[in-house]
Amino acid sequence: MRKSTSIWICNRFRVAGALLGALVLAGCMDSGGGLVSRLSSPVDRVSVAGNQVTVAGPNGYCVDRSATRARLQPAFVMMASCAAVSRNADAPAPRVPALLTATVAQEPAPTPASQIEIEQMRAFFASSPGRAALARDGRPDSVEILDMFRQSDVFFIHASDQSAAAETNLRDDYWRAIFDVNGRTVSASLFVFRNRPISDDAGLSTLNEFASRIRAASGGE
Image (cartoon, rainbow, N blue to C red):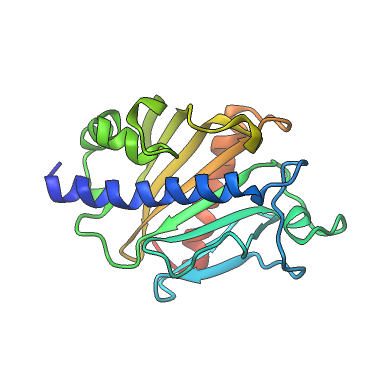
């Protein structure tokens, strides 16, 4: 992988990890594993990157607008149960409970993720800069790569981040999917709540559906 490409990927993922850590540690999550939002009318999608990408989740997931940063570079979107986000028990809730996030580059990628060889992706994320980009505290030693593979043109990472503080109510391990939509690189992640465990298969399936919903909502390939 060219040095410019690895730096580009690293910068975008490091911003996402740092922001997620800051938001969660600031108390965005309630004791039930949901998100606390100041807004009572939940929405199930948001457009970013100059309206080139629309982030939409599986049924029952809504945007936490108090935690979303649509104008950040890259844009950052957080989604959780519509019932938790709206604090309305009658609102929809997802079949698989989790916390979803997506980061979206504002500008087209110099090298689309789908065109980077899987061996290069594996090598980057196994390296210190790659693991640092995945860590919420930015430290490579905090992250252990559990699995990496590609399905169609989506690159999946299963990782464990030891920098996740216990009080956040998130498990250490999480899933990440990297793919392209309308020329923008999207990094979508799924985090599991400690008090509402799900299987790896359910997590991977939900993240795959998240990626598909983003593509369909964006009119992307």
